[in-house]
Structure formats: C-alpha cells, structure tokens
Amino acid sequence: MKKGKVVSSFQEAVADIHDGATLIVGGFGLCGIPEKAILALRDQGTKDLTVVSNNCGVDDWGLGLLLANRQIKKMVSSYVGENKIFERQFLSGELEVELVPQGTLAERIRAGGAGIPGFYTATGVGTPVAEGKEHKEFNGRMYILEQGIVGDFALVKAWKADTLGNLVFRKTARNFNPVAAMAGKITIVEAEEIVEAGALDPDEIHTPGIYVQRVLLGENYEKRIERRTVVQA
Image 1 (cartoon, rainbow, N blue to C red):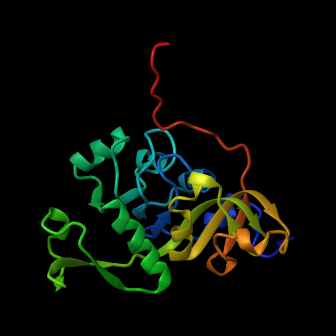
Image 2 (tube, rainbow, N blue to C red):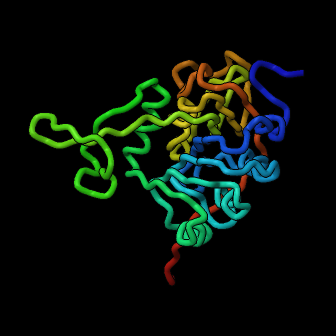
C-alpha cells in the first residue's frame, strides 16, 4: 500500500522517464548521487536524454553508466574531467556538451526552480561562455543573460525523508541536491532513511515536500572515492 509519496520500487519511480527527457541530477562527483535511480534508468534503457548535472560521474559509476550505455544525447555540466567515455563521445561528435561555470550552473537550476526565467551575471563575460548571449551593462560593468533551467524530471539523493517528501541532506552530500529538487517538474528522491510524516524537526528540513513527487528507500549504498591520492609513509 502506498503511503504518502513513497513508491515501492525504483523501476516504478522512473517508468515514465521518456526518451528525449531533460533530467536534472543531484550530486557532486560521486558524493550524494542518486545511484539507485541511475541504475534503474540504465536498466530501463531510456535514451536521447539531456542531463543537467555538475559532472558526469566516472566511467563505471554514476551518470557514467548512462554514458557507457549511450543513453545521453547532451550534457550540461561544469566539470567533465574524470570520465574517459565522456571524452571519447565528445571528441567523436556523439555527445553534445554545454559547459557552464559552476556557480552559474547552480544559479540556473535554482532560478528554474524558483520560477525565474533568467538573470544577469558577470561570470563568463569576454569568454566563449558569453558567445551568442545578451550583454547588458550595470553600473559600468558588463553582464550576460543566463536562462533558468527546468527539468522534466529531477533525480535527488537525500539522507532522510519523510513520507510527505520533506528532505534532510547530510554534510557535503547536500551539494546540488536541494536546487535539483526544486527544478524538476517531477522530482524523484531516494533516501537512506524514510520516517513518518511529523518525525522530522521542521528546523532541520532542507527541502520541503512541496517540491517532491516520489520518495524511495535506498539501501546498501557504495561509499566510493572518486580519486584516491596517497603518499609513501
């Protein structure tokens, strides 16, 4: 029996993500990524996706799995340096890439979730980032117009959720997840723990349930390290 916004399986949660959809995906590197939803989407085989995320994971984990399965048509990202498959697909022309400064990307997603269609920023002026964009001067400084981003779906990872979709994130795993949750027309959240409505202290809630449509319990998460650097003792 469904309780609140809780759904029973990841397959059910992603079933209506259609070919050609735009996804906003939380996480930073491999920290706070919605790994179970990504796996379900890989198994479903949905293709021609436009994915908006800080980066594209690594070759064998996270969004890199969708790349390897050739399900992503376009990436909107701020950093892509840890993924060899990404590099090959981009250089071959198979993958379209829009590189966005990290702060601008965060604000474009936040603006989309807040119903703001665009904003001006000085970041990128005088670089290829500004090409083709409207320029406007404010107080003697040049700015460019950036558009807010709204996704057909958002995939989010939370630490705790209640049955109504109120979310709590843990430390650095918070990263892009709160703004991603705001900007999806349908937001799908996987959480390490789901509690009853009213069990969360209102003061500790980072994202209110109004932004969330589906909640799932995720278990047995892998604590991967994106890049390990060691020194001789």
